[in-house]
Length: 127
Image (cartoon, rainbow, N blue to C red; front, top):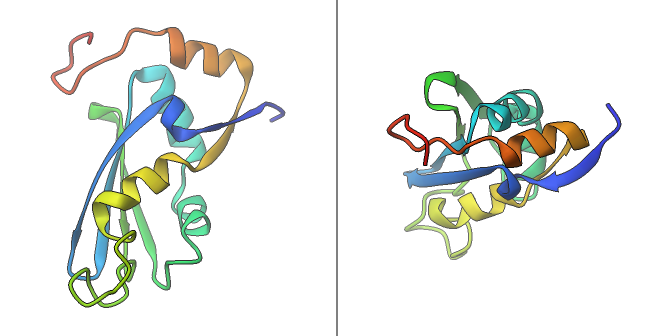
């Protein structure tokens, strides 16, 4: 596909946390058009490549279409755990922002649909 490159933050938001040595992400599309893009463009392999400088472990991914989300677990991302690591920027909360800076490729029509379709809140109604 030939298109334009955009950061994920244009069409999604994220929540994250950490537990021991893992970081857990929820990447949420604002609407169904955005979810279709995320589902195609944001794979475990691409997330692993995005975090490659920090990530010695695997990335697992699960689609959650009923809530327009993707779930990712980055194993080994905290390199021993948040309390043992001297880097403050790799705690789970900070890494959600890093994920949202990941760039993906979309067509202009897809981007227009994702930006113009009504947003859906977590409760399933239009936001």
